[in-house]
Every structure is written in C-alpha cells, then in structure tokens.
Image (cartoon, rainbow, N blue to C red; front, side, top):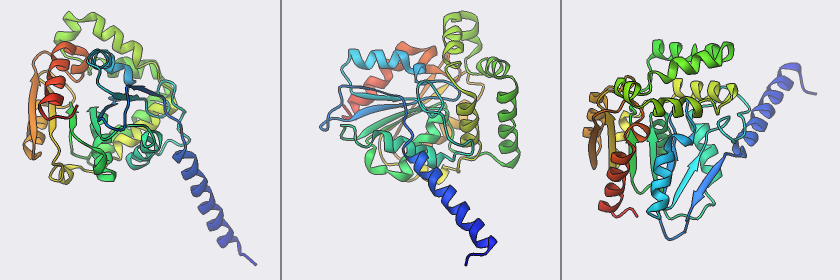
Length: 287
C-alpha cells in the first residue's frame, strides 16, 4: 500500500509528465514559403515583445527573391497557442519550435534572430547543430543575466499583469533609435501595433525564458557555420561593442553596423538590411 509521501511523489511526477506532453505538442503560428527538401530555408525568430511581423519587410523581400522561409510566433504571440505554464525554459521553448517545424520540407535552416531570437538560435544550435547552415544574429548577446539582472527581469511579469499597455509603451521606446523616433514615426507606430498582438501569458512566459537563459559564450566557439552579426550604432539595449566582441569570438563571421538603427534594424533600415542579408546568403552559397 502506498503511503502519503509516495502518493505525492507519484502525483507530482505524473503532473510533470502531462505538462511535458502538452508542451511538446503546443501548436505555433507558422507561415511558410516555397519550402523544398532540396533547399535551405530562412527561419525568423522575433525579438521580445514583438511578433514575427517585425520581419514584414524581410518576408516580402525574400518572397520577391523567391527565397524559402519559415516565419513563426512564440507561444501566446499572434495566433500561436498560449503557453500552459509561465516558467518555460529556453530549452522547452526550442523543443516546441523543433516539434512544429521538423516535418516541414527543408534541407537546412538559416536562422535570423533579433535580441531574444538570438537566445533561441543558441539553444537550437546546442540541440540540433545538424539543422543549421548559417546564422544571422541581430542585436543580441551571448551572456546570461547575473542574479540581480535575473531578479529585475522577472519583476516584469508583475508589471505585465498589472498594466500591460503601460509596460509595452515603456518598452517600445527603448527598441528604436532616437533618429527613428524623430524621423521614422511610421516605424514606431508599426512597432507599437505589432507588440500588442500578444497575450499576458505569452509575454510573461517569454520574460521567464529570457531571464533564466543559460550563458552561451562557450557555444560561440563551437559555431563553425557562416554568421552575419548585425549591430545598431544607436542600440539602447545591446551596446555595439557587445555585438562586436561576439563577432570576434565566432569562427566565421561578418560584422555589420547599422548607423541609424537602434535595437530593430530589420524595421529601422529595412532596405539596407535586406541587401546585406541577400548578399550574405548568396556569398556563402546558403540559397
């Protein structure tokens, strides 16, 4: 006969198992274009707290150039299912992504990740390096947060749940450069519109994912695929020198500075971004 402690342990194990099943089969919003088993595909990983619409200009450009792509939204963002728990690790998030894309038709992937999207790329590389042909890192960093930074980041969950609109308004101002705020009103307006295609559950879960991400500095040494590293001269979130140092640690990288961009160069300087992206893909025979 089971005692109470044994029953509690078994119930806890069953609950964890059921949560893992739910997470494993969580459906994400996916948009795909011209996928083929014989060709590589670009895959877009958005920045927090945006949706994949932040890559609107790149998606349109790749369609014009007939380059295959996969665009997705994280749990609780856009039309993706809401997360079943807030405390979702980066490993769990990437497992969800892999489950959603693994049966699609592509040879290998070229991930493009902005900010949080970079953390997703690092974890995807650790789990499935065989899937990756090349990488585009934008406005991101390899370091994990220290305990003070982690605690500060996790405090955002309370702000999200108490006043989401105020939180998003405050956050969006730091995402673009002062130049963009002054001269590209349409960019800030578009950004404010897309970051509202979110849920409290989705944002809270992503805050936890960001706050608890592992350190990826050692991972940099293992990435041998060609990498494009893009920084913003006026980035208020990730200083240019952080990106430059990251590029130096990569075996095969091209470092680019977007002069009038903040943290969102795909939106702030889309034409230059697109031209640099296409040149990188062609020069390294990725497409």
